[in-house]
Image (cartoon, rainbow, N blue to C red; front, side, top):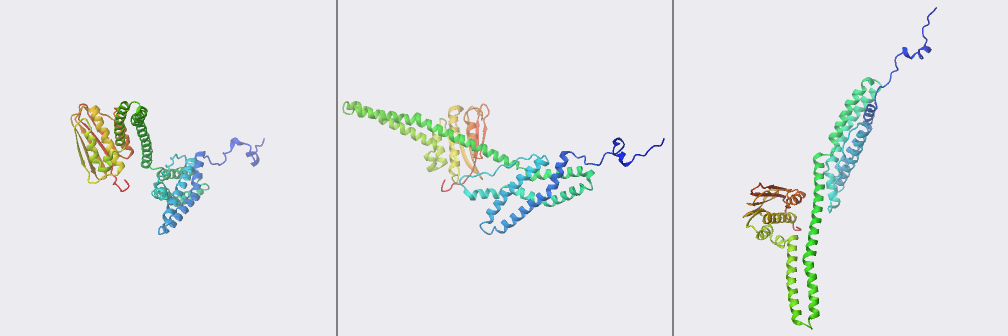
Length: 397
């Protein structure tokens, strides 16, 4: 019996005796990384061409009126390229990078303000830097990845993972939003909501005071004068008494309107400044108050108004809740801050969450980048310190 050697034809059917065919044993994640590395070159060429062309052109034209608008448009376009790169990194590298907040749209500044916001946009500048440094890296990763597909394919997964990790670091480092910038934007959005709520509450207070006070007195005055008119011929004495009563109502209505106007914005603050206005409000406090205002100039009208109403509400709290015998108000300027300190020798125990209006004051000051600190141990004394940003007063203030 003669044994037969297997032929080429039979070797194909005896699968148990032969080695498996050579193939790429790469998973889908590795193939995505390889696709990203191969796409680096055309994407880097596009970004580098855009960055150099736009910057050189706008830089050369900065001597003309269209240079800076063109540079602002370049930075806005860079934001779009950064958005595409983040999308590519999410799809192929699994990098989750938050989108930066859009540029704020200021009111009243017009085109110049929007252009200035674009020119100082850190997101646009970091994206241009990313586009610059990507070209040599894109060439390197493309050459290594493309060559390894045919020559070094056994180690290609390790090469791809290492180069993809460098890409991940670049995306996170240059295309992610600035934590400090995003935090500040979130604060400003929150402060804007506080300002809107505060303005709405003040408007409701004014409407309520008008409806319950001066308006009611004026309605009563109109009715009294109507009755006096009817009795003028029949009973002159009674009509005269009614006119006298109406005259008293007019005085009370005028006083209420005057108090309401003082609550909106006192005339003494507009005419004579913070020192005189604080002295006036201190004179109405039930506790003797010493006012010291060391200001060589007046701050902006908005800052001056916030300072006045802060002290006014603090003195009201002292009158109602402190049980103090004396109090003091000190106002001074320290570099670019307006500082206010209100002290009393009362029972203490004041807190921001005690429902005495302290929290509302803290929110109002925080909305304009100010600070509000309460130091009030039980038994006293109480010291409240407020800081406001100093802005110089202009002619329009």
